[in-house]
Length: 315
Image (tube, rainbow, N blue to C red; front, side, top):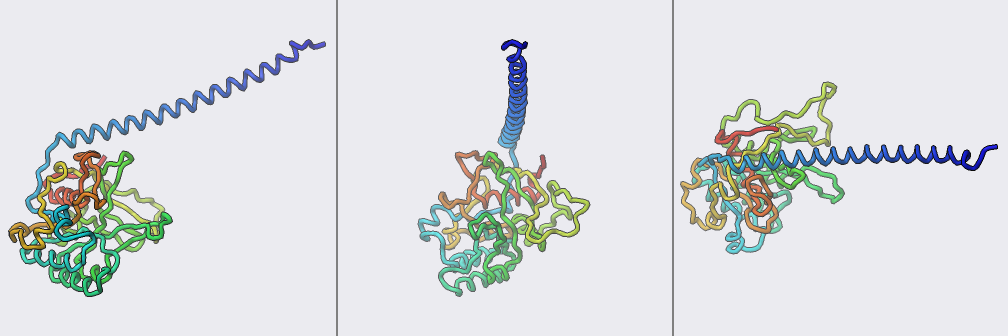
């Protein structure tokens, strides 16, 4: 007859086996967590080293680039944002009179102006008279459901522009903008980056093959799928310096004719927001989180690189 001790032995063995299996599984899970944490740590260290090297390196800034800044001074003088579009028309006319190479109006103008259709007409005429104005397009979540769709400038403005260019940036998991794609598009059309479009319109001879890492192409792919957003020519942005390194003049000063015409003569002029609180500013390797760089200045750094003053890199 089996004793109680003999009957308990198999149960003890099964219990020990289960504890061993659970222990082994826990060890494997712990090893995976450690490995993932180490990978993230190494990635973080790699980015930190890259950023430090970026801060130590100095890049020249082309004298052909000027930013017309919608700054705090402009808001104080002109009034609350947004401004009537005839105001932008006046600024475009002021810059045009100085014969710039091209103007990049880095403002989201996807809806008709609130004041009147005459406002859009005036701005459209100013853009058309210049003949070398680039406007931005963006992807927006119009319905608030997470579905992104392409938003182009109001029809009257898009028709007058010499080109449209996307203004999207790559924000890394740590919140820092280090790179961008120089070409993006859907299943029907492709658009250059805003900076690329500005240089093309200004007559700059870009290489036949844009810099940056090419997107992988599947050998089974036939045609792009409509409704899908594609990105190509990914490149690290070689920032020339911290925020404020690119020449800026105040929008209000341009509007009032207080800026000498030679400031814009044969220059690539980018008009955009730099005022605190307007939301278009980002952490970069040259700024960090304490001092953000306006989106228009990031675009100016891309222009600077494409002009050959500094050079792109890929990782």
